[in-house]
Each structure stands twice: as structure tokens, then as C-alpha cells.
Picture 1: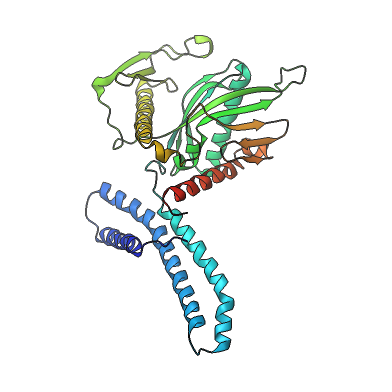
Picture 2: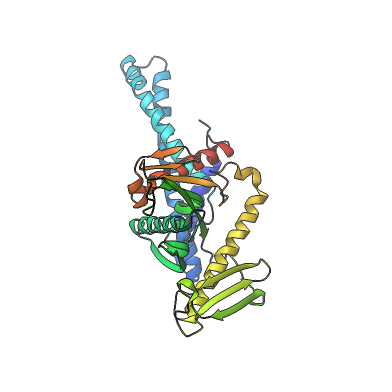
Length: 361
């Protein structure tokens, strides 16, 4: 067990006291108040964990002192010796819990997210699978109390989606969904398959942290904005007004298209939010590339072309290839109710890799 420097823990407690005092004193603008409130809510669980860790340290030290006391009461020493293993275990658990709270935080973890799902190889079956994935995340979001709003969608000819982009709003959405980015594969017998053969098709998922104005600044001069009529399946126009918006960010070449709302103003606002999320994600990816050695400590590469998970319907099996996790609970995973089991395994693996990278394992 690697000791955690006392100076580091003292600094956290001091900062907690300062923030508490500043909030109690009032004053300042509303933005400062919100920032301090968020910082306090982040610090409180860490300070509580420090208290438990130090209590466990003190308890074990007291037990050890009784055992080591020369000429001490033999009965008390024997009792202390019996209690020592339990005290050591409690200290180890408190140490581990505190270590996890002290790990570097991803600045985007608390944010809402943009979820993009695209049908890959497999034709109509891939589009149906993309629809299944979208419903899985929508149900999972509902269980978490998050809100899902579709930004744009392109339906498949036999159902499902060729592409669907949605905003998932709530605190901590990105932290839970960020490991979902990648290629998802399905193995099942399509309804149109007369010979009972299993087909394999795929869909790709991308999860982007939603950018706030403080995260990314967009220069209007860098944008090419086009308006057009919204289109439905087969390309037919679904309304007579030019409410659909396409924004091209000229420096990066990123293009976003939104046509869900009948209001051009609403579509423009959603398109800008989507563009900012893509630019913010590109900026984060560039920073991550500059820290390539550190990225090796993460679960998978995060490459969206990487096959991350297989959903096998004949065997009712879900396998996440990054952590070698297999669950024979496919229906529950697809319904969103068992998705936490997969995500928890990914988060745990990620934390273990980070601990090792920080030299805290």
C-alpha cells in the first residue's frame, strides 16, 4: 500500500475550508457562486474519504501500540492482535476509496453528451441494429433520469436508422457513456432470412462531450451556413419552408446538418451546439494524441473504428472485447437495465490502469 502524502490531503482540506467560507460569505456574481458550489460538491466526498482514511490509520496505529507496549496487559494485547487484521482491511479499503477519488478527473466527465449512431456493414439489418442501439441508450438514459432529444435522423428503408444523432442531457452523462464509442457488432437471424442463417452486421457509436461557450469559441467568419427544405425518406421534401440548416466549419471541414425542427432558428441553434461538440471533441482528441503514452493506460484506444462489443442473439450473449466481459443477459442489456454492468466493468478497468499510471496501484 503506497502511502498518500499528508501534505496533499491537508491541501485538499484547506481548499474545502476556503470554498465553504467564500460561499457562506456570499457576494460575487452568480457565475462565481455556481463554480464554487460545483467545486464544493466535488471536494466534499474527497474530504469525507480523507476523514475515513485518517480514522482507519489512527485506529490501526492504536491497536499496534497496544500490541507493542512492553509490559502491557496480556489479555489486552491478545484482544488487539485479534482486531488487527480487521483494522488493516478497513485501512486498505479506505486507502483504495481515497485513491480513486484522487485520480485525475476528465474535465468533460460531468457534461451532457452528443450521441451519434451510424449503420455500418449489413444493409437493412445494420440500420435495424442502429435502431436497437439507440433505443438501448434511450432506455438507459430514462433509468438515469437523463433527457434525450433527437438532433437529426435518417431512417433505414426497412426501419431503424442509417444515422441518428441525439443530445443526452444530464449530469455525468459523458462519464458513463464515453466508453461506448466504437464499432458494435450484432449476430442474429434476420426476419427475412428463410434458411435460418446467422448474419453479422455492425453499427458505429460516437459519444462527444457537449461543449459550453467557455469550452470552445467559434468565429462566425469561419462558417458557411446553408438553408434548405427538410427532406424525408427517398429525398422527398417534407415541408415547404427552408427550415433545415447545414453549417460548414471552413477551417476544419466539419459539416453538420439539422432538420428536426420546423423552426429555422431552432435548427440553427441545434446545429451550432452539434458543431461546437465536434470541435471540442477534435480539440480533446488532438490533446490526447499529444499524450499518446498516457492514452495507452486507457481502456481501448477510443478509436471509433475499433470493434468493442458483440451482441449475439442466438446465444443471448453480450461480449465486451476490451475487458473480456461476457454476460448471458442480452435482452436486459438491450433494454438498458443491465448496461450498467458492462459500463461498471469498463470504468473499473480504466481506474485500475490510471492507478498504475499514477504509480498508486
